[in-house]
Amino acid sequence: MIYTKGKNFIEIESKSQFNVEHILECGQVFCYEKQEDKYIVFPEDKYAEIVEENGKTRIYTKDIDYFINWFDLNTDYSKIKAELEKHAIMHEPIKFGYGIRILKQNPFETLISFIISANNNIKRIKLILNNIRNSIGDIGERKAYKTFPSFDKLLDCSQDFFKTMGAGYRAEYLYKVLRQINPRQLEELKSLNTQKLREALISLSGVGPKVADCVLLFGFNRFDVFPVDTWIVQMYNKYYSPLGNREKISHNLVEEFKNLSGYAQQYLFYYQRSFIGKG
Image 1 (cartoon, helix red, strand yellow):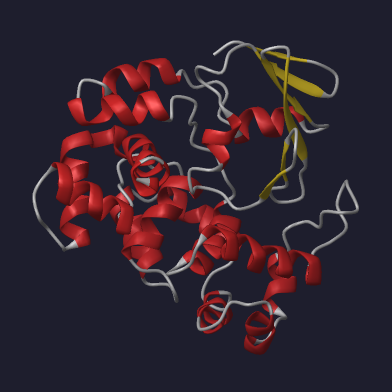
Image 2 (cartoon, rainbow, N blue to C red; image 1 turned 30 degrees about the vertical axis):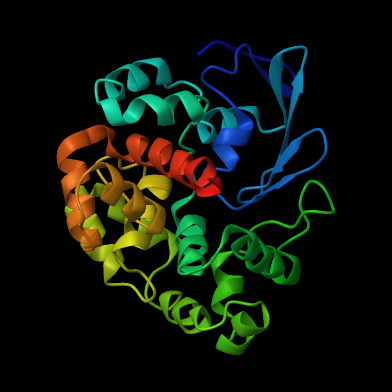
């Protein structure tokens, strides 16, 4: 993908491999806001504004290299899409979500975010995470946006604190998981193969198979996983065969898409939820 670096911006030539709406609205991330003419993202302690100008996309930030990596700008998605389109089921989802890219997110922030995501909707997930940021995060580059809290600050929080933030029954999971693992230990898990890493994640409080697969995909960039939620179950039962076992559905789809499973999941999920879900 063609992009150029300026002093305080990254400019992307074409939307064919980068559509900020597709990227941020496809369920993989919660640290963003949509404003009238731009998107704002604030992962970890970073900040960027994404706008469309004269048919091009600009990412305004002082953290140029961070966001080149975060948006995975050096990966050629045209090749990924060409491989996936060998599967007939992928034709319409790729046409619909052509500008999706899978972000390279921080594993710890991803773990906390997706524990909160369990049986939840995106609007409420964002609200809970913003409540936590605004309560104990540091003042970031822009005063209106606080950073994702450090592990130590989160560890100091009580279960009741997470309840007051809106986490509900997930408050217990958050309180416990912070006593089971820290960011350094999560980084050390990167040496494990996907199956061992998945087992390690599922052993944690609040992490079931679907949350584990989301953390694997979005926090560890393991593409040989296929997170399955209600939308994917609906898709599978419509286009494949009736099946209610989510673990089996995930297994079958990984068997089909192999090391491109994570990419396939995002196109299919975004299409099913955005297009079919409105029908």
